[in-house]
Amino acid sequence: MRDHQIYDPEVETRSPEKQFDIDRDSYKEQVRYLLSNSDFYQKKLAEAGFDTPEKVGGLDDIAQLPFTEKDELRASQANFPPFGNHIAADPDSLRRVFSTSGTTGVPCYLGLTQRDLDMYATNVARGYSAAGFKPGQRLVVGFNAGPFVAGAVYYGFDKIGCSVIPVGTGNTERMVTAIQRLGATGVSCTPSYGLYLIDWCRDQGIETQSLGLQNMITAGEPGGGDPFVRKAIQDAFGCTIRESMGIGDVSLSVWAEDADEQGMHFMARGFVHVELINPESGEPIPWEDGAQGELVYTALQRESMPLLRFRSRDHVVVNMTTNPTGRTGPRIRCIGRTDDMLIVRGVNLFPTAVRSVLDSFNDQVSGIFSIRPSVDGVLQTPPLPVVVEVAHGQSVDNPDLARRIKEEIKARLLVTTQVRLVDHGSLPRETYKTKLVDYSEVAA
Image: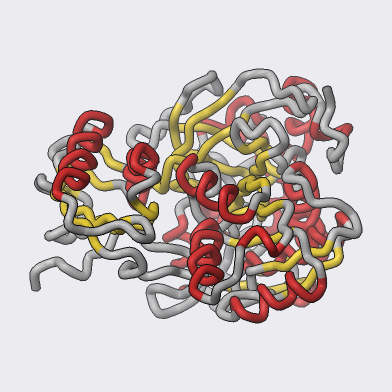
């Protein structure tokens, strides 16, 4: 059975083998373009012994090439402001310039030509159509139009033909009012915001199901596919929830979930090549059912800032089973970011894994939690402090609940923790992304 909401049927149902054949030709063209137009890659590849397209080889040889790291892009822009020497198009051809949050003090700029912008929009149209958004549907968008690249989502909704009501972050009252008065049935936001919206409506005395939402798509952080988060949002609003995942430097909606709801499908076909690697050794991992690793991206049709073997730091688990919607290729769930991983006495711990454990206690906890390390850094000594918020109406005076959560984390994640229960609503509700690891209690 095919999902009737396939935006690009020819591309999305194409066999992986045929797609790879097409990608081989695109890759050769992209490599030639890089070596002709990108000072950054001319130098980087020459230093690694690949100074001609012939030495670079074809797509089947890509694993021999060096990775590109985010820190290299930061250095590129710091040394060659404002766009860096990895820009491969005339700066005057840029039609949008987005930026990162600038957590180091200086934002990184991301420039898109019209063709690049259209590519981002096409991937959003593919992914969000798969998630259930339809032409003419009214929806509210919880992402700002800028400065962050998530604002490019609006162009994807234009391609679908949706009736978009821009709201952005920081004004939940305006969003809910727009849903009520304009009859919006769809929402695009982060999973953190979806959870925040539940509590906001309750505090305002608004019955969540009275809003009439039909579907929600989450992006920007892991969580939309987590059973705990999904159940909380679906139960509250009576809508379907599906997730999407992109990476600003590559594209929005590189992955998105469809009606089968068994992981996010690769939506950037033809525009991006994706590899799975061992995050520690860097060695390739075959795309097999159940495989886990880090995603690495290579642009195939990019003008402004094409990236070659860009490490995403997104750690995923792979689903290679047949998709009844007709879409082909791998599907994934994001476990977490490699950068966020903690090592507790030799055990790798992704913070999102704690939330999966809390799913066993969903009638007693809210799903909001915070890991509070006592020392800076990746290496942690047990017990690892974990603060867990109880569900609405539940008491924190419940040592048995804290004990059972601690035992479940130990049994499933092999990590010894110190679980502290806190009142419902006492942990911050983020309207964009939520930090799951909080180092504020590290001793000075």
